[in-house]
Length: 339
Ligand SMILES: [Zn+2]
Ligand SMILES: [Zn+2]
Image (cartoon, rainbow, N blue to C red; front, side, top):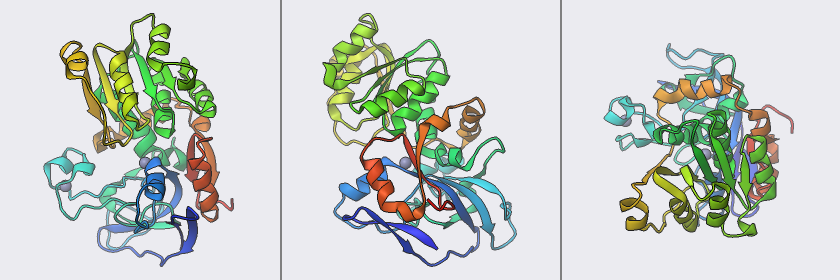
C-alpha cells in the first residue's frame, strides 16, 4: 500500500509499505480521509529524529477486513480514535483513551502507523460508526479541530451569551471559531495571517484582530467596551499570547490551552486571586462526547468552508509545504483521489 513518510528535507514523500492484515481484535480500515495537523508539522521541523512510523492521527474510513467475528463488519463507515484503549482502567472506562494507564498504550501517527496511508490496522474498540449524515471528510476533522475544541468549550461551560476570544486561527482555532459561533457566542479571533482572519469571518467570527495592527489587549478591550472576554482559547502556542488572554479575562472567566506549548507566564495575584479565572487544557474529546460532536455536523457546522485543501497521497510533499505556508484552513489527504 501507499503511505506517507515524513523526512527532514524534503518534508515528505510517498512510499510503498506492506499491506496490513487483520489480527485478533484489530481490523483493517481503508482510509477515505485523513487530516494533516500542526503536530505533524512539529514532527517535521522541530524534532531531530526521523518520524518512526506513518503519520496521521485524524481519520475516517471503511472497514475492509476483519479477523475473528466481531462487531465491526466489512463495509462499515467509521471514525478512528488515534489513542488505543485497554478498556479496563478508570480512564478508559470514562472514555478518556488519551490517558489510558496501560504501559502498552499506543497512538496512531506517533508510536504506530497512522492514517496518512491507503490502509491502517486498528483495534476495533477505537472505532465509532460514522453517522449517515456525516462525510468521511467530516469524520477526519472530528478528533482534533472539532472534537478537542468542542471538549474545551464544553469544559468551560460556554454559553451563547459569552464573548469568546480565539487566539491563533490555524485549524484548531478555526474549529473553535465555527463551534462557538454555532453556539451563538460572539467570537473575536486573533491571527496575523490575513487568509486565516478572512476564513474565521466566514466561519462566524464577529470580529478579527491583527496583532500587527497594534497591542492585542488594547484592541480587544476597545471592541468589548473595556469589558474583556468571558472565555478564551489559546490556539497559537505562544507564551505571551496566554498572558494576553489572561489579562483580557473578565472576573470568573475561563481560559483554555489548545496549542502545544511548554512555557507560559502567569501572574497568580492579578490573574487568579483577584479575578478567579479558571485555566484548563484539552487534548482530545472523551468517547462519551462523540454523539454530541457528530450532532454539530448535523446542525450545520460549515465544513465546506473549513476544509480548504485536499491532496492525494502522491502529493505528500506539496500537501505539507502548503499547510506549512499557513494559507489554509483544514488540509486533508483523500487517499482514493487521483490528485
Ligand atoms: Zn491533530
Ligand atoms: Zn486504559
